Image (cartoon, rainbow, N blue to C red; front, top):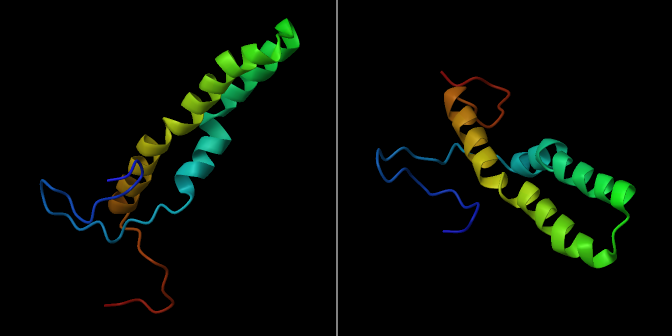
Length: 97
């Protein structure tokens, strides 16, 4: 299993995850909200301390990686759970009965 791969079904209850399609949602949320503190930290470090380039490599790069990569999986889980809760499905013009 990959870092962001969704299983075919739940190993505990057998729920089929074929409905789940978060697409680019996790990346969008991370870019808009989760990485903002990392970028602000990096900019403030540059403005206030004006460090050497290697300080940004040692300090800012890990902060940016942690603030962008770590939230991806929980946000993807949240989007899949939201799709399940709200019974989100692929859009259709004719309602099935």
